[in-house]
Image 1 (cartoon, rainbow, N blue to C red):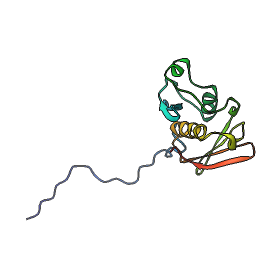
Image 2 (image 1 turned 90 degrees about the vertical axis):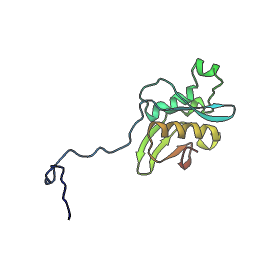
Image 3 (image 1 turned 60 degrees about the vertical axis):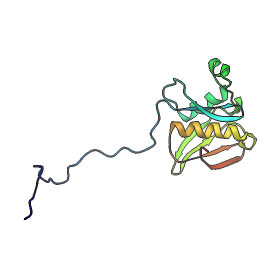
Image 4 (image 1 turned 135 degrees about the vertical axis):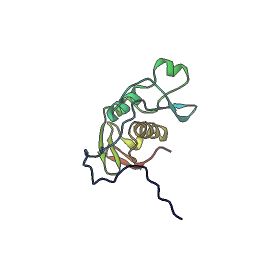
Length: 139
């Protein structure tokens, strides 16, 4: 003997709604990546919302006094800012104001990891000084 059970909800047709959101989702309190003991490390900072341009400028300015006292530094040169950041299909195109071929591996990681903490969008293409570093991930 088979029993049929029902929850009392009747089927309906398609219910129209609004367009689904698109584009990158910005993290309102992303990690900022500084250098400590030669390694790139994430740190929390009460910052509020950051844009890609803010990220490069912030990293180029260096850590706050409190962060410096904790042994945090930056390898992003001061002349890396200003930067432009554009959303592309694969992630972000970032053009800095210095030659990217002269950036240290830690400086590249600081920029890429902090940008991807702000907008988890895939990869970062860094450009500047006639050179480029393509499809970088936070690793």
